[in-house]
Amino acid sequence: MQIPASSTEYLHIPVTGPDGVDLTGAQVRIAAVMHRDNPSGSEWKTADWIGGEARLLIGPGSELALARGDYRVWVSVDPPGAENITRIAGHLGVT
Image (spheres, rainbow, N blue to C red):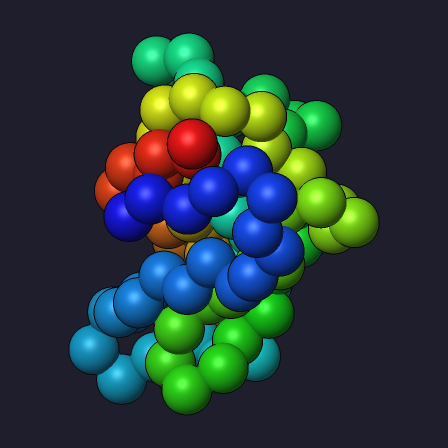
């Protein structure tokens, strides 16, 4: 996905959990980073659920304003039980 740096919009990430687990009540976080390491604590932003997707408002005036560059997008979900699921969700280009 590519967006201009001047755009403020929701970043949507489809998320599927373990069979039989409803994720909509689970905490979900999103990070967009330019490095290749796992995101650090301060890089994670609390997201919300809409229609089975995690979403986070990004861009100017939001909690996650992004400069021009190429980002790795991560999602982390903490469903009930022992699992805490963290995945690379894709790439985001900001022009």
